[in-house]
Image 1 (cartoon, rainbow, N blue to C red):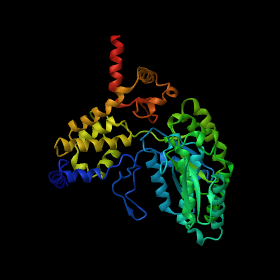
Image 2: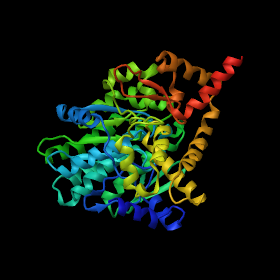
Image 3: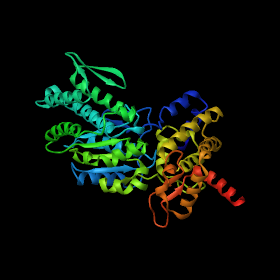
Image 4: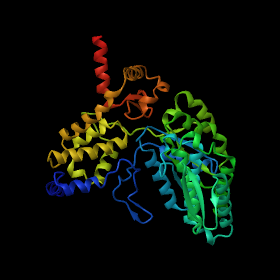
Length: 448
């Protein structure tokens, strides 16, 4: 085994462009991790899913199974911690297991930019992905009553969105531009209208939008969901609504999570929604919890000690899946894992950048010097923290409280980590990348 590993080290090198391309082709920090194989498809060009410790998926499964058809679950956690990867892994695993449940994955980030997306945009995106999933699984024109439901939904949308219709097409006005939808493919036409309307809602100014999600939109969605429930022997679908945590506008987030809670409650399906971390804390915390219950939190993975001790296996698995095992030193893995702060997206980005740095330095494998160059570059983002931000970070570190005021410290660049509670350990930690900036702040305070 050691001889083979030694041979691999000699035969491959990150200084060789083709070997660099091979490794970079197995890493993707911007999309959810993929199963090695899913529905007969072999995944390449994606970071593969690696099992993490903890009971997050067990708790999620219990919530869905124990409240069949009525579950309302908020999943929260910091940016890049792996919420989408965990939900997608659970979703795909359940789909492969079969059974009567019908699983639908709704991605708010698929066609629109959700930063300012309000409630109507969210519900339209849900409707778009529900219809796409159902019409792919059940060929519509081969069903007894589904074409009638489709036609009713389409006609109501045309009226609501003020489309101008003739025999061959419907023309909508989105953002002051004409958007024709041709009627020769009715299933595709409905998906197209729902998608375009959702995109319009997400990117347009509030004054140009269609307004709060009308009850009639939920009624139409329920017609489709009820049809699936009957087909699945009276088992309601399970909807995963991902990337609502990317809604950064506070008014839009409040609208989606609080103001339209009755509409969420009327959707006849179990629902799992990712929530912006800062909106499950602070001023909105109790309003959100009164509507949804306590959120299910995904914490960062364990951060290895900088100098010694075991490195959690998930880091090694990511390295191995990217074919990087013979091309990175263990002390370099430790450096990158420690300074990632347990945020897996950051760790994958570090690996990508370290591979490129290694190639530029003409090293065969990632050396600690290459890893340190990447880390020092990442630390520059923390030079932009204001005095007020560093003062707040300092207070939270010393007292272990004050999280409600720290929304800006939870987003990139992440200054504060919320870690899984353990006996004798506080839940709040300063991100390793932010510690240098905090130490400089301390020095200035002492001199002052």
